[in-house]
Amino acid sequence: MVRRSFDNKMLARIRVMPLLQVLNKLRDGGHLFWRRDLDFVPEKDGNTVRLFLSSPSGFAWEILVTNLKWYDARAGKGGGGGIDLVMHLLGVDFVAAVKLLLVDTVM
Image (tube, rainbow, N blue to C red; front, side, top):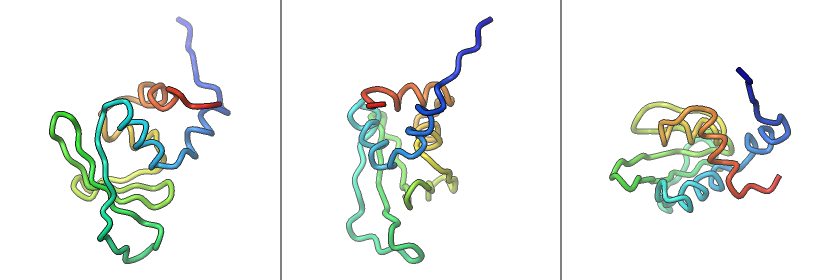
């Protein structure tokens, strides 16, 4: 059995991909819709934004994003980076999340 892995440089670029860019990829791929809560005032970090997401099937999330960290306020779960976010939102494994983020990504 041949074990294949992703190139470390490729993974490094995906890991630093801004989360709004990750969400745009998911939106453009038809996986979800998102919008920023323009009335949200962060309490701790001025870089934090609140986003409302929904899937075509009607599932909804409230996600707080601060740089590369995210927190799902409804599920009480958080993580770091786009790979974790895609895994959380779409319920896919690491390999599927990376492949999805590689689509149309300039390396």
